Image (cartoon, rainbow, N blue to C red; front, side, top):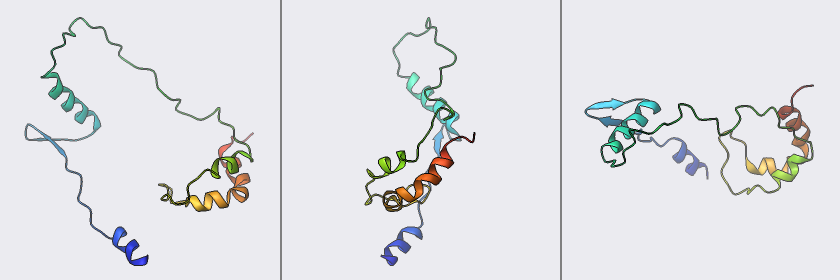
Length: 117
């Protein structure tokens, strides 16, 4: 197991290639989006010259979780469903720790996620 972990952790990875349009590297999400848009517009046969599109779209999700309130007994109910054979999350916390330690972690997690009154 240790050798397998070392192999995964210390294997060099190939960097993601940048997008090259007309011999120019495209940097950033906005430039990449515009490059794809220009490319696909070349093939469009739809006449949208008379279209009136909105300038801004409403956010799909709220930017804050102010309305979220958790209770101590909510955590064990959620964590019991975790599949302990799955990989760790991006925070590095083991699903096994969350599942089997849910009752002990509930009070701390509830304090962490609830606003201070």
